[in-house]
Amino acid sequence: MKGIILIMDGMGDRPLKELGNKTPLQAANTPNMDEMAKEGITGIMDSIAPGIIPGSDTAHLSILGYNPYEVYTGRGPFEASGVNVDIEKGDIAFRCNFSTQNNEGIVTDRRAGRIRDRTNELSDEINSMKLEDFPNLEIIFKESTGHRAVLVLRDSGLSDKVSDADPKIEGKKVKEIVSLDGSKEAEKTAKILNQFIEKSYELLKDHPVNIERIENNEAPANLVIPRGAGEVPYVEKINEKYNLSSACIAETGLIMGICRFTGMDIIEMENVTGGIDTDLNVIIDTILDQVKNTKHDFFLINIDGADEAGHDGDLEGKTKFIEKVDKVVMSKLKDLEDVYIFLTADHSTPISVMNHSGDPVPVLIKGPEVKVDKVTQYDEVSVAEGGLCRIRGSDVMNIMMDLMNKSEKFGA
Image 1 (cartoon, rainbow, N blue to C red):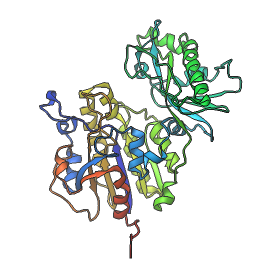
Image 2: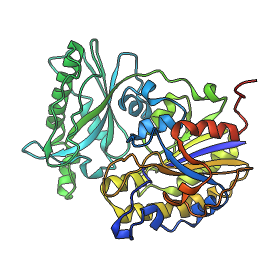
Image 3: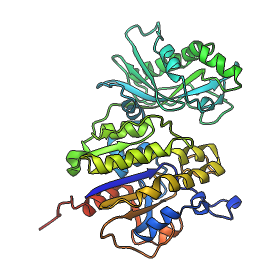
Image 4: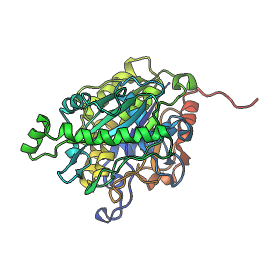
């Protein structure tokens, strides 16, 4: 028996007046998800705990059966792992944004117009950077998907106890990075990062890629903003933890990085860019091929577009993307036999908030011998009446392993 956890990143939301006090998921036309709800058992889930606002990283760790309060050191190492940067003990890793800064030092676009291509050329320029005050410092920089990138600092005497540079909103200057614990290691790391940010603007502002973007009325990616500092953590391998042969199918470097840390095989996909314009046909074809034709018996799948739309406050985009996933992906996924499918979101990204929230997300399980409840629609409100009631992310793997007959009895 095989198992799938399919996470529609950021799918959860809150009721909106524009939709007659419905959520985008409630308003969307999702006949296939509704059919899966009719044939399965449903409920709601707090990825970490009620009211706790999860990141995608901490949420996925929890759903995969790890305690994020124990293994999470920061987002950077997972992002770096996700784009195949070899990180070593003592390295400090950061997630980064390619961003847009004007001549007055104001960040006018935190995501550089959601740049999609030629970021490798910008990365090459960043990798040429030298900081005179730190002659032994090694800077490792690599682009990820879209506007995302990773930075790894390699030197003696570094620390991840530093603040973020991200101003969080447009119209402000980049924050000065400071030590969080007053140690000399953190002071050194903060000084490196502040110089790195300043130098990134010098290197990128007149880069040919950005000159062309300006000529095309696109936001130039002329600044790198690091955040999410983290030291390389130890994570128990999921295949040993649950006696599995597991694989990850995802669009973003972060999710691939988390799965690589846990020991999952990473299934590469071509022409999949992430976001609401991603090629869902490639994703479903990859899922079906892997489930039917490989040794893997467990899959973590992440589809990202709803989260992007939520962060952008794009109500129409989020609703239409949910409908597209239902039509392209769920229409075929629901017909798989002898497979347990756990469908959920890692967190809510409400249109009204344009960021993550602590709202619980909908869940359903479809598969052999599942106890079917009376719920007939898959949305945040309907599934609250389901047979799973209210669970936490840390319950998911236990439930799935029990259904897949991979659990061991506790007690005599």
